[in-house]
Image (cartoon, rainbow, N blue to C red):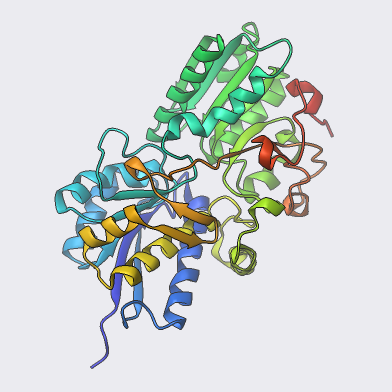
Amino acid sequence: MSTPPIKIGYCLSLTGALASNGRTARVAHQMWEADVNRRGGLLGRPVQMICIDDETNPKLVPAIYKRLLDDEKADLVIGGYGDNSVSPAMPLIIERKRYLIALMALAVNATLAYENYFVMIPTGPHPTDALTEGFFRLAAEQSPKPASMAILAADAPFSVGPVAGAKKHADELGVRVVSETRYPLSTADFEPLIRPLEPVKPDILFLCSYLNDSVGLLRAIDAAGLEPGIVGGAMIGPQNGSVKIELGPLLNGVVNYEYWLPVPAMMYPGVAQVIANYQSRAAAAGSDPLGYYVVPQAYAQMQIVEQAVSGTGSLDDARLARFTREHSFKTVVGDVQFGPGGGWAEPRVLHVQYQNIKGRDIGEFRDARTQPVVWPPGLASGSLIYPYARATLRV
């Protein structure tokens, strides 16, 4: 009789607004699944990952995890990509006392304080502050220092933390919030959101958006000729190769967070091979052609699971959680240790500014020349061009 597989269940947004990033994570997980099975699986058993599409709809998530646990009899569960796929699962995860490593969810555990929760995102123990700290540090260094800020944010769970962090940073810098707008994810026309900002002339335009929103917002900003001092902050989208191709020069001047880029300081052991393997599969999967944003974190997510299971010789949730709290892990994003609340013990968020993009060829983005790291100083590969209008290249 063959050995039954270890089933690892989870959901991802394989369709809907976050589909590109969800499909990217799925490919990275499939790569790990193939790699670990080539090495003999876990505990002498093959691994089978069961992924269900949540359609970028948080309302579907609780039933998916109930199905995974009760019907599919998953031995382990992991968290999907982002707050939308993770937050709704948490009541059941806590009720069942399950071990969970989530992927790039920002502040899901801030109020829950669930001890068996961990998350692959380099925002450290204060995620809502760390995500945009570099953006506001850079703004504060300019002369004259920005004095006003407008906020445009998607009305979604992800936005809550970044907007709260942005307001905190603004308050500390003495920057006045002159406008704040939340827009539904169904928004297709962004010009009505931009036009009211023209008479306001904010020094900082803080954007908290999803993939399609990011494209619509930057096109509307360009069409209106709006010229704040600094633009960006918490946009999900510019990190994705497909969005980069779609926007091309319209990205010039935008300052935004990143988690990994192919700069010398971040070429950790194994990451180049993972990226190359992923990029050979991306076209067939319809996922991000570069994979720099999601792939290293998603592959490392499963490396954590692998090392915890191997280190404990167990699938017991409590033992896995205890091991994860107490150990450091070797991954393709470097050494990872978790701190209070399940986030990384130390933050490692990058901020980049898109510069000198001339066209819409993916080759412009394969290295960091058009997306230099401008913060933190220890990883910087370029300097901020300020104000936004100076960095904007019209073609």
